[in-house]
Image 1 (cartoon, rainbow, N blue to C red):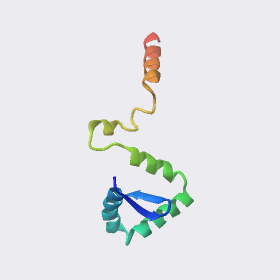
Image 2: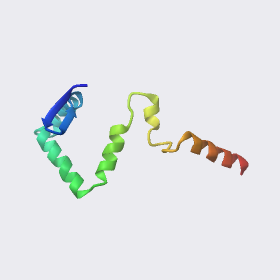
Image 3: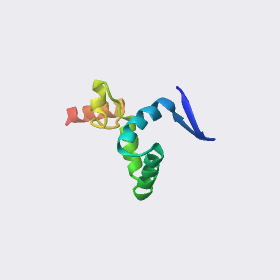
Image 4: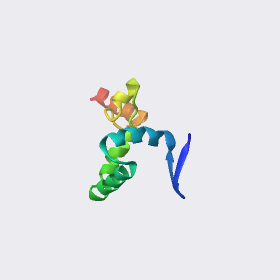
Length: 89
């Protein structure tokens, strides 16, 4: 993984930046403007971070990615207990 060093402790994945830059340039003038808009959005609505994190972690290109966020965050043990409870009822 290649890394771009912006400042001392500000490291970004080079491939991700290059892919994002293509998309950003279509809608914004520069990467700097996009980052500034992102930071302004976070200041006005901190819950934006949760939405962005969910989208960033969502898997794509595979069938299982379709199910992200649809079946919840339960562990296998929790699902098994719940299934057994429903059987007993």
